[in-house]
Length: 466
Image (cartoon, rainbow, N blue to C red; front, side, top):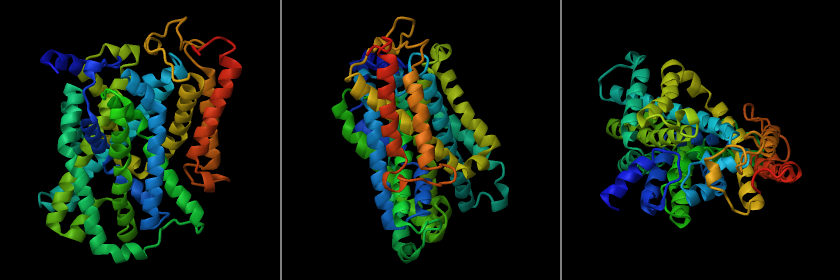
């Protein structure tokens, strides 16, 4: 690639417009490293903690592995075909289903999801940094009240600086921080080798007594955790030139690290009642091991936060009022909500992680079902790429004033299906949840409703470019 082509690509990847072939320069290794760095953050420990409430170590791993691969496959089928064919992000991929105005619904879902994950990650970053300073003797336990908000501000500033060069900053930080994936495996080895007896003998705290229900719930947690990659996936895979380049990196680079590193959280909560290795590694492995791990645990979250802010900033480009904003201003708008959460309500947000996971399952499962049904069964994989960005009357995805009632109905029915099968706040379930999970029926039913509503309402009216 010439210097001129590199400069064009560097500017193009800061916009939401389709990337041209010359601008899509991420091969399999570059994409895989970026996806793995983004996937392997401390959210894995919390995901593992929730599975460890219901299942032991071995069954927890099997449930997480199954759920994670299923969830990653669903996201890949739903968003990636459009994103990688046309070089667009996840939000653009929803316009054929929701309309030239209705895409605002998935866009808001994306912003809430990424702000939530980034807040969680940077709160973890601050806590790990606090533990590191205590371990190094720079401060005592009672002197840390202001450190969390200050550290979150520092982390947000670093993310801003990394992303000033667009996807190039994401690529560079990924090449450095991918080392924390291997540090994570080392931490798991330390815990297993030192506390295997405690882990094997531990009883999950919230096990229901019904092994089928517990195992299904472990799979469900894995599925919804990976569905949360929908907001990220498009902005990253659009940098790859073709689907063949992206298939293996998506499943291996983004899907595999989550269940593997979540085992740290499963083992930690079973043996020590603490999932965060920043808190237990000094006790298990000694101060030197603790300091090494704390450095990498803190750094790990920056890689994922960088990926999230990048995807979120690209998503904001679809709002006409923000399309002409400079890239630094867009980054600041994306980071600002994370700063507010980190400064004013870090502990409140941290304590309600389960409710946040609930939002992921209820919202992204039906969205994926609608996208799969629309692209493969209604449009026969044919997309009007111009209509993705031109939404005035008479264009393909204008529907009714920019809104597609079929997708809205399917979304509502899908959300209702999920809540009926599994109340995401109380975890009270109804049949046939024990044998199907909540996400999978939601995806299928939302897809079927979208197909029926399209054939009954939209196609007879000649709307939607079908």
